[in-house]
Image (cartoon, rainbow over all chains, first blue to last red; front, side, top):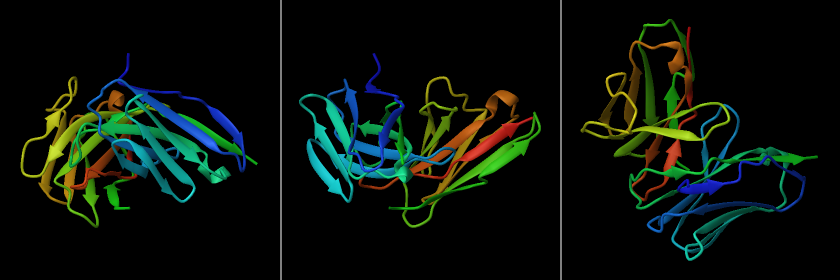
Length: 112
Length: 114
């Protein structure tokens, strides 16, 4: 079993839809949780960074962490074609230079 | 967010030659940088963790004599692929960590070894 599980998709939604992306993990020591967006042939871009359980909102993006269920989510509201990319969840046991454990990434396509 | 640059963005070299890739944190100091490798349609594979002023820590299965890492300053880390072969062709990405633990990635370097 992988430490971090993420559905690879592809996930196809119409423009304007609410997108829900999820990861589950097995290591209860993970404390820091991140979501990255990666366009083809580009480096990942940090979207959300959260510590421990709870919600965090930034524009059209909302990240949720439920440590009791070992489950994290990223919601994208009013999805746009420009949101089409691969979304990677990542997590670490500690901040400040600790290495990340990544999910496999979910490929998202937002169609007109 | 913070900015991390990589140079070159792509490189083609002959088999047997060495290639150096630079990773710079442009607007923050990074005591820790990471080097990843990514194959098409796959997630990132951590190669090594680089700390300023000390030897890099390599992941299991990564040859430290083949992938030389130098972290000479708080804003610069380099990865040198020595005696490159076609199987080393890949997308190499670096990241730099802030003190708060956020990791920002460079745009990546596409290496093709002929």
